[in-house]
Length: 258
Image: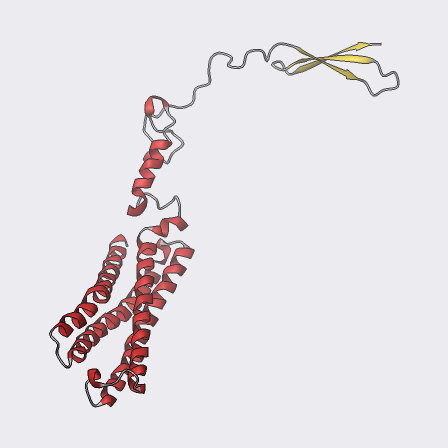
């Protein structure tokens, strides 16, 4: 099961890296480099490159979300209930945004592009088809951004922060909290000679950890001394009384004075 979970994390991290690289490097660079050559159809060529690459990113993201959802149910017992629900919601968001981005938004953009019958560079910015194309482009960017954010949160939920919902049972096998766990162990060293306390888990306790030994001397001297406390009886005679209380012996002596 840990191997399967690691494979899921590897696939999710790979797609996340590819999506971020496409958004931050590939798409801007394609337009910037081609326009630097002052080509009359630079935006047309760059758009074709970006559209083809984005199709791969969206399709792989949708397939990955379905695969991770299926394996999430296989590993359901390895997560807390809240962690499982959270990662399922995030993976559904990933699948919806990539699916809509590819088969709804990108499909409409391709239809508009085919209906223009000329390069997009030659279409005025105020043309209705150009405005609709730019609007769909903004929707596509938003959808991919949501998918990236959802996959990033899902990665931390699946890998590290799942122990937040299972603390402390699964703490030792979680890489994200190993440093924190070791720090907790150092702070919790309450045994003598810097040994770990026997109150920790069996796997974390030194075999020869010192136990608490009651002191052989009285650490609170004076408790055996009698103390006098004036009081008054509530009977009819109401005599003045003095209670002699011995705290150490646990006995009360009352001296009556008429």
